[in-house]
Figure (cartoon, rainbow, N blue to C red):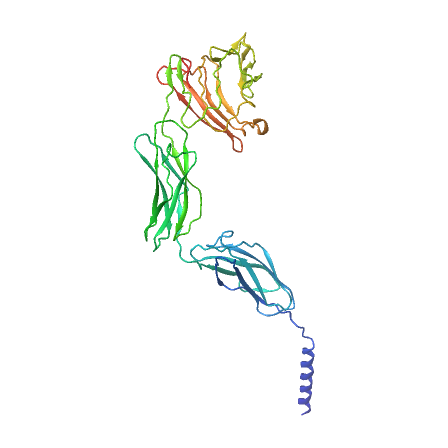
Length: 432
């Protein structure tokens, strides 16, 4: 009996001693966000997608995480406002916080779309659920989307009437009649001269139709001219959505031009359809017009390793009988010639330039007609650009070259050549 009491006393003391040594443990909660939520898109008032982030239980420590959005079928900037590495903090004792993402509302019928919200970089909590798929639920009435082809190209033609057809699509098909009221608008192409204008015409999509064409009559001719353009303007759309965008119709010139041949070679007309003459030098008189031209003087050819020295001497350049003569002279292997430019005096952006010239012949001769960008002094070559209208080698009398030079992370050029048929040479007569 005494032995049993002694055992009980020892056991009781032992139990009390163990309890006095135990410490309280820190609570580490689970952090999670829902797998999915769905939010109506809205049409007038901007809507927020609100995602609840929860802790499984309160803790006496601060809990934090970072969160970001990620595209699904919904696109940041178009359907919602992107968030990247934002920080969310739970103060001690808090168990629920909200993440908010702004949605981009509209009144266009479209399919439901989704994006994702991810949480990461968790501190003082265990990650239980890290991603929410947010569905932007369409709440707009069914309204198909109307689109016009942005650019339509049509060859002008010369005799057979041509019609420009601009494609119009409806996505998806509608169970209602859709109408489009449209007009033409002049660009470089003019009503009557290049196309037949249309004002307030109506294009009709019957229920179920998804493809139609707007048609405009083109005025064709046999005159060489630049490509021209006009525009289609949508005035009104019923039973469909339409976002106004520029719709351009380009009329591509398909006419050729043959200069007139006279006794000393080819000539060009005094005027062209649709163009205005802004400058011409027929070299009347007996001297160069220095208000228009400048002699560039020097040797070496500005990087071309040319042997001649450019001068302003009459032996190298002169005007008489309605012509400018540029002559290369060999004076005991001391070569001279002339180089004439309009830099700072005549400058053009768009247009047509006709030059009538007759070439010399002989080994080592290299005449050229070329254009440089007016900003060459500011950006240098080749950033200013260069168009070599004509380059000619004196030992290839039947061939000329044309080249475009420009800068694209360094010097780039593209070009080609033209060769006369038969035994003709560019030294035989004037060419344009």
